[in-house]
Length: 430
Image 1: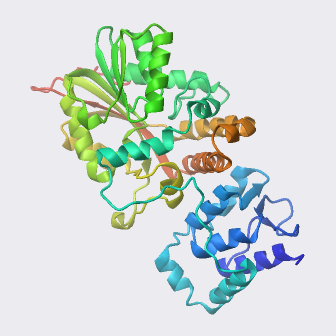
Image 2: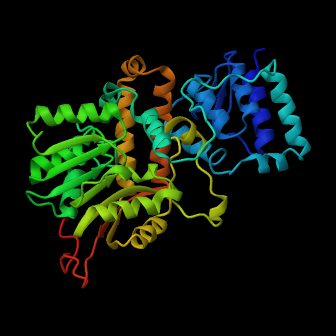
Image 3: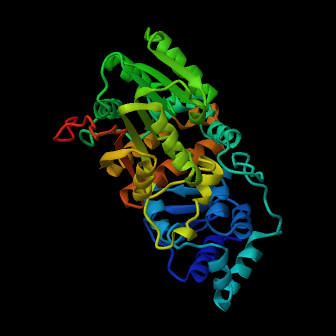
């Protein structure tokens, strides 16, 4: 067969009801589609079987992670062109069932089945999370989910994140700045918002590889307790603190935020951690942090947010992200976050939206990964490297297109009779 690409193009267009915006390059070497456009490379028939047995995003993700599908040309352009056909159509079992009532759609599916070959469902790639029944966001399941994402090797994260080892949105003075400068500026911004002073105690929830703890202790003279559920992160952070001679100021624990009992703290930073808490546990999370602060203490909550849905009850997590990147992660609208923080007792004093900064950050991480691709594969696996490349590139586009955002929320445990300790003119940290 020397015309697989043309046949695939026709079948996909019949199935979707619109022209394909990308080229198709098939396993037989044939090509079809708009000249000059990025190409969706279908390396084998197994890719089609994955799509047929798991229609929608999960089937595509499995084919991508396994190397059955690839992109030839600019990855961002290809994802942007495909977004309207895949991620923005809202395809699920209900809409698929409705679509199959259309004779043209049924005909296209039959054509794909014939082209795919023997109908054996391929096994999911090894990188996919194996789901088990049970409650979400228990101490055990949270630790397992965190380990899946973060315990893939510190050397791999060094390659992607660079020397700063900060795995959250940087704060860019201008687009041409270095990633290290932008991450340092983010850490300093958090410290200034928290108004850290020498001798104070800071709790860093989800401390990662210790970058916030190191910056706060070194530049602002505070004592820091950093907590994480990742053994690899904790070991790395402890070594960094020892190398800088800061072990007298920094304590790194493998500990759940629900088990911290040695408050009060003068300030709490939670940077890129609250996305793992879960909607059902979020009020508990906010209440626990509130209880750990002294009266007048400040919380800086740095968190990704999704856009509100017209029907919030119909919201579901991203299938690719949940299966391959952040198991059990949940995003909430910024309004929900602010409401729950205030229900816990906090007075929210400032909200800063910085989504464009995360797009810039992600593009730098993707560039680092691509530049060190061969080593990344050696450090992890081809599938894991492909997971990270797709998720970071797609996330960059999501921030750029305002599909998701990221916000820093500054909240105070305001004591009676209502003296917050905030300046009359806020944002003195700028």
